[in-house]
Length: 212
Image (cartoon, rainbow, N blue to C red):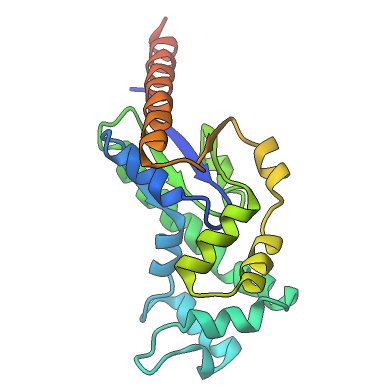
């Protein structure tokens, strides 16, 4: 039996990756979010959290012993070496946990599923996907959405954007693109178009691999 397709979904901060994933979910397509997995692997009791606390000190933990993400971001944001160390601890564990989730999705019977990740290209997770879908909006939209959603000022939002892969490079690596500047109806129409394309592609791959 041919494994179902994995569609990688990525985009800059504020692009609307979760909205896109939810629109696919409304059409019966399951997904796993690398951000959710990144939170799983630093829950209390997880080895990664113990390593992080030992390296950075107790100030990166809150009163309940959970990771204080804001405190950790403040340490690593302008410290490339510390960020690299953190990624060396978290990225392999995220990948291992993602593989577990993807195996579960493959067994679920859908013709394809989504791997949603803000670092799809940067982390090498694109290698886990058969196609890559970029959710795209202009930087002005990213800034507006991020300041409204995350309670940060414009300078902070622009700093986060500057730290991510450049928009042009992300688009150059895309197999498919969703322009997510419009309203919910426009997004739903575009997702429906891609859903039809991915279902047809999954069917053609299954047919080709099933031929003698």
